[in-house]
Image 1 (cartoon, rainbow, N blue to C red):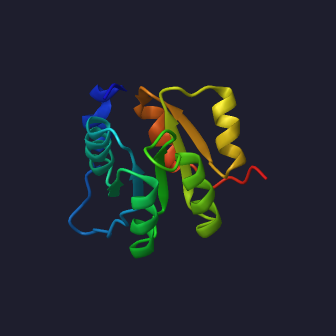
Image 2 (image 1 turned 90 degrees about the horizontal axis):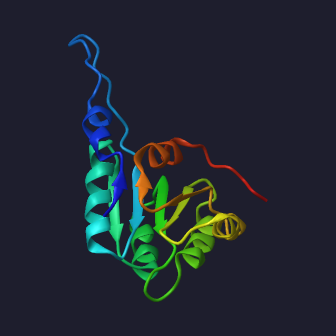
Amino acid sequence: MSIAGTEELESTAQEPSRSDEMRTAEVRRTVLLVEDDPANREALIEILQLWGYDVLPVVSAEEAEYAVRRRRPDAALIDVYLPGRSGASLMAKLREKFPDVVLIGMSGLGDAAMARTLKGVGADQFVGKPISLDELASALRSPRTSWH
Protein backbone atom coordinates (compact mmCIF):
# COMPACT_ATOMS: atom_id res chain seq x y z
CA MET A 1 0.00 0.00 0.00
CA SER A 2 1.17 3.42 -0.76
CA ILE A 3 0.83 5.49 2.38
CA ALA A 4 2.28 8.97 2.40
CA GLY A 5 4.34 9.89 5.43
CA THR A 6 5.27 6.43 6.70
CA GLU A 7 8.49 7.89 8.07
CA GLU A 8 6.31 9.69 10.61
CA LEU A 9 5.13 6.42 12.16
CA GLU A 10 7.84 6.19 14.77
CA SER A 11 7.44 9.76 15.96
CA THR A 12 3.64 9.51 16.01
CA ALA A 13 3.70 6.19 17.87
CA GLN A 14 6.02 7.32 20.66
CA GLU A 15 4.28 7.66 23.97
CA PRO A 16 5.04 10.69 26.08
CA SER A 17 7.01 9.84 29.22
CA ARG A 18 5.15 9.69 32.50
CA SER A 19 6.35 9.75 36.04
CA ASP A 20 6.00 6.56 38.08
CA GLU A 21 3.86 8.49 40.53
CA MET A 22 1.09 9.17 38.07
CA ARG A 23 -0.02 6.46 35.70
CA THR A 24 -3.36 6.73 34.00
CA ALA A 25 -5.19 4.01 32.15
CA GLU A 26 -5.48 4.80 28.48
CA VAL A 27 -8.76 4.09 26.77
CA ARG A 28 -8.21 2.21 23.53
CA ARG A 29 -10.68 3.34 20.95
CA THR A 30 -11.94 0.69 18.55
CA VAL A 31 -11.68 1.25 14.79
CA LEU A 32 -13.62 -0.92 12.38
CA LEU A 33 -11.39 -1.30 9.30
CA VAL A 34 -13.13 -2.46 6.13
CA GLU A 35 -10.53 -3.04 3.41
CA ASP A 36 -10.55 -5.85 0.84
CA ASP A 37 -6.95 -5.45 -0.35
CA PRO A 38 -4.73 -7.59 1.93
CA ALA A 39 -1.62 -5.37 1.65
CA ASN A 40 -3.59 -2.19 2.35
CA ARG A 41 -5.43 -3.84 5.24
CA GLU A 42 -2.22 -5.10 6.89
CA ALA A 43 -0.49 -1.73 6.54
CA LEU A 44 -3.48 0.10 8.05
CA ILE A 45 -3.76 -2.42 10.89
CA GLU A 46 -0.11 -1.83 11.76
CA ILE A 47 -0.45 1.96 11.64
CA LEU A 48 -3.66 2.04 13.69
CA GLN A 49 -2.20 -0.30 16.31
CA LEU A 50 0.95 1.82 16.55
CA TRP A 51 -1.32 4.79 17.22
CA GLY A 52 -2.97 2.88 20.07
CA TYR A 53 -6.23 1.88 18.43
CA ASP A 54 -7.87 -1.51 18.83
CA VAL A 55 -8.59 -2.62 15.24
CA LEU A 56 -11.47 -4.78 13.98
CA PRO A 57 -10.31 -5.70 10.45
CA VAL A 58 -12.77 -7.16 7.94
CA VAL A 59 -12.83 -7.53 4.14
CA SER A 60 -16.46 -6.84 3.23
CA ALA A 61 -19.60 -4.95 4.20
CA GLU A 62 -21.24 -8.22 5.20
CA GLU A 63 -18.37 -9.12 7.56
CA ALA A 64 -18.46 -5.60 8.99
CA GLU A 65 -22.14 -5.91 9.89
CA TYR A 66 -21.43 -9.15 11.70
CA ALA A 67 -18.41 -7.69 13.53
CA VAL A 68 -20.33 -4.68 14.87
CA ARG A 69 -23.00 -6.95 16.34
CA ARG A 70 -20.34 -8.25 18.70
CA ARG A 71 -18.43 -5.03 19.32
CA ARG A 72 -19.36 -1.39 18.85
CA PRO A 73 -16.69 0.69 17.09
CA ASP A 74 -15.81 4.26 17.98
CA ALA A 75 -14.79 4.93 14.38
CA ALA A 76 -14.96 3.12 11.05
CA LEU A 77 -12.49 3.39 8.17
CA ILE A 78 -14.25 1.99 5.12
CA ASP A 79 -13.06 1.42 1.57
CA VAL A 80 -15.72 2.68 -0.83
CA TYR A 81 -15.22 -0.07 -3.43
CA LEU A 82 -15.72 -3.48 -1.83
CA PRO A 83 -16.71 -6.87 -3.21
CA GLY A 84 -20.45 -7.39 -2.79
CA ARG A 85 -22.14 -4.42 -1.16
CA SER A 86 -20.46 -1.04 -1.46
CA GLY A 87 -18.77 0.85 1.33
CA ALA A 88 -21.29 3.67 0.86
CA SER A 89 -24.23 1.36 1.61
CA LEU A 90 -22.38 0.06 4.68
CA MET A 91 -21.81 3.63 5.89
CA ALA A 92 -25.52 4.40 5.56
CA LYS A 93 -26.39 1.33 7.62
CA LEU A 94 -23.74 2.07 10.26
CA ARG A 95 -24.87 5.71 10.54
CA GLU A 96 -28.40 4.51 11.21
CA LYS A 97 -27.29 1.97 13.82
CA PHE A 98 -24.50 4.04 15.46
CA PRO A 99 -25.28 7.76 15.15
CA ASP A 100 -22.17 8.84 17.12
CA VAL A 101 -19.53 6.72 15.34
CA VAL A 102 -17.01 8.65 13.23
CA LEU A 103 -17.33 7.28 9.67
CA ILE A 104 -14.39 7.75 7.29
CA GLY A 105 -14.60 6.69 3.66
CA MET A 106 -11.46 5.97 1.65
CA SER A 107 -10.76 5.35 -2.02
CA GLY A 108 -8.06 5.69 -4.63
CA LEU A 109 -10.67 6.92 -7.09
CA GLY A 110 -12.05 9.67 -4.92
CA ASP A 111 -12.85 13.21 -5.88
CA ALA A 112 -15.13 15.99 -4.66
CA ALA A 113 -18.20 14.22 -6.06
CA MET A 114 -17.29 11.05 -4.15
CA ALA A 115 -16.85 13.02 -0.93
CA ARG A 116 -20.29 14.64 -1.40
CA THR A 117 -21.89 11.24 -2.08
CA LEU A 118 -20.36 9.77 1.06
CA LYS A 119 -21.42 12.73 3.17
CA GLY A 120 -24.93 12.19 1.82
CA VAL A 121 -24.99 8.67 3.29
CA GLY A 122 -23.60 9.81 6.64
CA ALA A 123 -19.80 9.83 6.33
CA ASP A 124 -17.93 12.37 8.42
CA GLN A 125 -14.69 12.39 6.44
CA PHE A 126 -13.18 11.17 3.17
CA VAL A 127 -9.51 10.30 2.67
CA GLY A 128 -8.00 9.52 -0.69
CA LYS A 129 -5.45 6.83 -1.43
CA PRO A 130 -2.52 6.93 -1.14
CA ILE A 131 -3.45 7.83 2.40
CA SER A 132 -1.73 10.73 4.09
CA LEU A 133 -1.01 9.73 7.68
CA ASP A 134 -1.60 13.29 8.87
CA GLU A 135 -5.00 13.36 7.14
CA LEU A 136 -5.94 9.94 8.55
CA ALA A 137 -4.87 10.88 12.08
CA SER A 138 -6.87 14.10 11.86
CA ALA A 139 -9.94 12.28 10.56
CA LEU A 140 -9.79 9.74 13.39
CA ARG A 141 -9.52 12.51 16.00
CA SER A 142 -12.36 14.53 14.53
CA PRO A 143 -15.66 14.65 16.36
CA ARG A 144 -18.79 13.24 14.78
CA THR A 145 -20.13 15.95 12.44
CA SER A 146 -23.65 15.99 11.11
CA TRP A 147 -23.99 16.97 7.46
CA HIS A 148 -27.78 16.85 7.48
